[in-house]
Length: 258
Ligand SMILES: Nc1nc2c(ncn2[C@@H]2O[C@H](COP(=O)(O)OP(=O)(O)OP(=O)(O)O)[C@@H](O)[C@H]2O)c(=O)[nH]1
Ligand SMILES: [Mg+2]
Image 1 (cartoon, protein in one colour):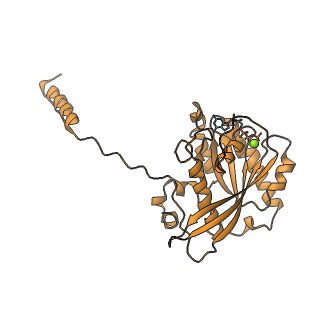
Image 2: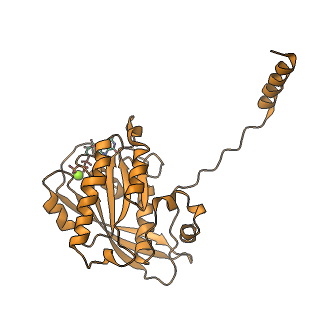
Image 3: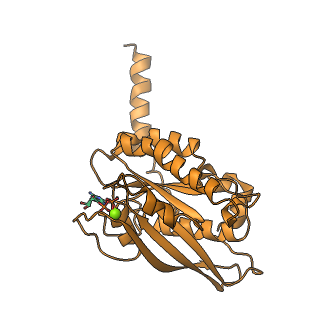
């Protein structure tokens, strides 16, 4: 090595040592709150249904959403209806209440008939997969999407098929993201989000106790449901998961989030 090179390396090391530590970037909440315009009604109703393969963690996640603790035991669901209230804040600080009918369904084969009974009137679907299972992710593309779209065709005339709502509003929900091998489907899940044109995409864990943490994603999901419920009821066009990924880059979304 030339003396000149040695000197350059030495200077770089000194510069590295004396340069101040970079300021940590403040962590922004990933999902921002919807700003409801002041002329909309104060209470809105919304029906949300969760679907996906059996034993992927749908019921455990719903339990977390309704503030129940994590229960490790699995009992196959047939149909479970929950009611919950969500709140969105208006620009003037007043609240708008969203009364949500939240339906948990059976993921197993053979329950198509029962599931079909709970689809009519649904405004928002949580389409769920397990983050270490490519099979459960791919089944969203085929089995679950086909089943939901067939139902929409079957129930022509309900309010999901208004001219501006010709496609289902989906949130793609990854379950059990705490698992060591949960990165198994990373990348593939974005392809599914793209293909199914979902409104949002959130990875969650029902096992993580702090529902406000990024590792849990439960509060993030709740906030996103609130945002989409308001946007749906205000007759907004269907947003794309990419809009929520970079809200600051999209003037349309930024206008509605704070
Ligand atoms: N590590 C981990 N395990 C989970 C999590 N959620 C669920 N499980 C496990 O997965 C099992 C199945 O979860 P359920 O919520 O019952 O599955 P499901 O999708 O509702 O199943 P079906 O009702 O049969 O469609 C649970 O008994 C837990 O042991 C999670 O977030 N993390
Ligand atoms: Mg269940």
